[in-house]
Amino acid sequence: MKIAFVGKGGSGKSSVSWLAIKTIESIGCSVLAIDADHNMDLTSNLGLDPERTPLMHKTDKEFMQEVGLTEPRQWSRLLNEDEMNLPTFTVSPMDSYTKSIAVKVSEKLSLINLGLGSPDVLFSDKCAHGLSGPLKYYLGLLNEGDDWVVIDSVAGTDMINFGLYSGIDAVIGVVEPHRNSVKVFEQINDICRKTMIPCYAVINKPTNNEFYTAFVSKYQNIILGEIPFDEKVMAYDFDTVTEKTKESVVEIINSIKSLDKRGNLISMQNFHTVKKSKA
Ligand SMILES: Nc1ncnc2c1ncn2[C@@H]1O[C@H](COP(=O)(O)OP(=O)(O)OP(=O)(O)O)[C@@H](O)[C@H]1O
Ligand SMILES: [Mg+2]
Image 1 (tube, rainbow, N blue to C red):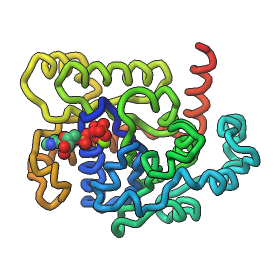
Image 2: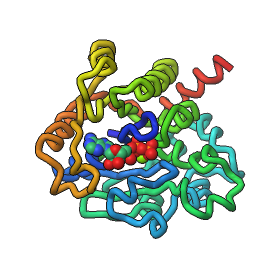
Image 3: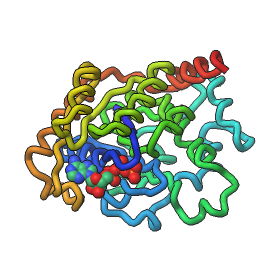
Image 4: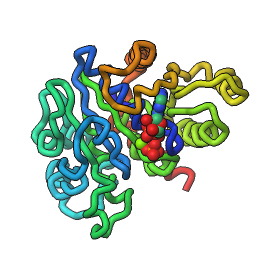
């Protein structure tokens, strides 16, 4: 299953990504964590130094070679290729490209840091979309089988509009019961609906207020669960996280397991067809 946690800045994306990854690891599944945000918090939450991890964005040339492109900035040409002509990336065992960019965190857990926030970005001539191009197509060509891929995202709608997640199975909005957190989720949900990307929600730090009540009543069909406020989360030591929190994340992971797998090159093509049709 390939999933990305999205939502408003500060809603809890990196914490929920971390909780999901550690939960998946604890139930014995292999998981590839992908840190696709500027602040590289997921990398830190997993106990790694973002300055000392390989950076995917630096491997443009290698990725071009993998997919058979000869000119830079022609990623969208991949949408015209017959899927059979393109490589398939895998988590376990790892294909050689994935191996070259992933850090092994533990037996079952590896991390790819895109590196949007690394100091060398200052000297790059690419914007965040350019830096994320290889990841976008990598995700569509990634066939994880029974393994998991969990992506921590840039806040807001920008990367959703860009189609970064058009090749994954579901985007999951992390929503706090506050006005603007709900607003950003609704913006994301709207883009996903229009572009046929399945979108779900997880309520983080629920409180019994008017936003919570309205959100639950409106989105009950797509809410996968709730994660309580747990001050132990802030320490990012999974052993100390409360049982209540762990149980809530297991329930969420079980719900995600039952979702359809649909992310591949065809779902990416569909996304771009919709975009073109409205242009
Ligand atoms: N369920 C929770 N219980 C307690 N604290 C939490 C919980 N979820 C997140 N936090 C805390 O809230 C703060 C924001 O969370 P986090 O960094 O995960 O948000 P984010 O959406 O990734 O932010 P950004 O948009 O900056 O990347 C952090 O201090 C984090 O430890
Ligand atoms: Mg974050």
